[in-house]
Image (tube, rainbow, N blue to C red):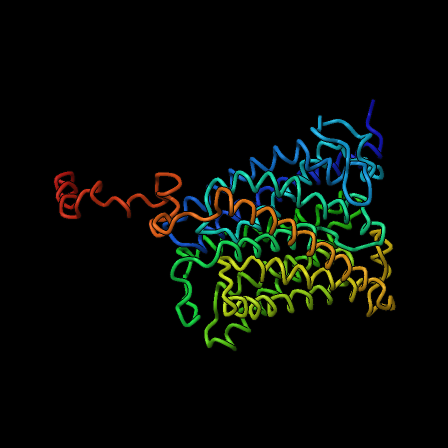
Amino acid sequence: MEPTLAQLSAAIDATWVMVSAILVILMQVGFALLEAGSTRMKNAGHVAGKTILTFGICSIAFWALGFGLTFGDGNSFIGLSGFFFDGTQTDSFSAFSASSMPISILFLFQLAFAAVSLAISWGGFAERAKLSIYFLFSVLFTVLIYPVVGHWVWGGGWLARLGMQDFAGSTVVHLQGAIVALVATILLKPRIGKYNRDGSSNLIPGHNQVYSVLGVLFLWIGWFGFNAGSTLGSTSGFFGYVAVTTNLATAAGAVAALAISWIVMGKADIPSMLNGVLAALVAITASCAFVDPWAAVLIGFVSGILTFFTSIWFDRMGIDDPVFAFSVHGVAGIWGTLSTGLFATPELAEKVGVGGAGLFYGGGFHQLGIQALGLIGSMAYVFIVAFLILSILKVTIGLRVTEEEEVVGLDLSEHGGYGYPELLQPERIQPHAAVRSNASHTLS
C-alpha cells in the first residue's frame, strides 16, 4: 500500500527530529574544542577526553532514570514512571501524547539536551577537579538535578501549568548547567596562580584560540538542531522561522561583544567575541519561537554586552570560571528567559501554545512574572542541591587534585599521558642536526 499523506508527513517530521538530535549530540565536539582551546596545554587531553566519558555516563543514567523523572507521568514536582526506557513504551509519557513522533527519537533528542546541560557544568570544574568527580557527579546531575527543573517546565510540572515559556532551554538546559558551574567554582576555589595576594587577577590564557573558534562554530551549527529541532517537526515550515531568529540573535551577539571589547579594551578581543556568540545563542534559546526578528537581534545584542561586562566583574570578585560558564550560560540564560516576558507576540505564543504575550505586546506583567518566578524557583533548587552534593563529595572523597598534580597538569596526573607528547618528551625526538643529516643522506 502506498503511504498516506499523513504518514509521509510524520516520517519527514521524524527524520528532521532525528537529524536535530544528531546535531545536538555533535555540539559535544564544540564543547571539547572550546574547552580544550580555552584551557592550558597541560590539561588539553583531559578536558577533551572527559567530554566522551561524561556523555557516555549521562546516556546510561538518562536511559535508566533521567528520562522517566523528566517526562514520565507523576506529579507537579517530578515524573514517577517510564524508568529503564525500553524504546517503545508510550503509556508512561503523557507529556508526549500530542506528538506522533516515535518515542525512541524523542528519547535521543532529549538525551542530547541533558548531555549539553551537563557539559556546561564542567566549565566550573576545569583544570582542577579529580577525574572521579566526573564519574559520580555525571550520574547525580542526570538523576537528581536536571530532571526536576526539566519536569517542571517541559514534563507537565507546575511551571508548565503556569505557562512558562522556555522553548528550547535557556533555563532548563543552560541556566541549570551554569548554576552548577558556579557552585563548583566556589567550592573548588581558584586555580593556582590565578590571583595575587592583593586580590588582583592574573590572565591565564587558553592554549589554542583556533580550537576555541572552531568549537564555537560547531556549537553555532549544532544550535540549529537545538532550537529549530524543538519544533518537533518540519512539514509546517515553522522550524525555518526559529532558525532565522536564532541566527539573527547570534550574529548580533558576535558583533556586539567584539565592538564593546574594542571600545573598552582598545583591542578587538576574539575570546570576548566567542563568548558573545554563545551568550546570544543561550538567550535566544528560550524565545526563538516567541519573538519577532527585530527582537531577536536586540536579545542577541544585549547578550553580547552582558557577557562581556559580567565576565570581568566575576573575575574581579575572585570567581575563577575558566571558560566563563556562568557569564555565558547563566547570565544570558536569565536574560533570555525574561526576554519572552517582554517580547513574546500574541500570535507566536498562540502558535506555540504556551503562555501569552509579553509586556511590550499588550500582555502586561503576567508573562514576565511567570518567567521571573520560574527563574527564581529553578535557580534556588539547582543551587541548593548542587551545593549539597558537591559539599558532601568535598568532605568525603575530595573535589580537587593535589597542588602537585595541578601544577604538573591533569593529562599526566589523571591519565598518565599528554595531549602534546612531543613537547613533553623531546628526548624521544631526533635532534635537529640528526634530522638534517638523515634528510641529506636520503636526498643523496
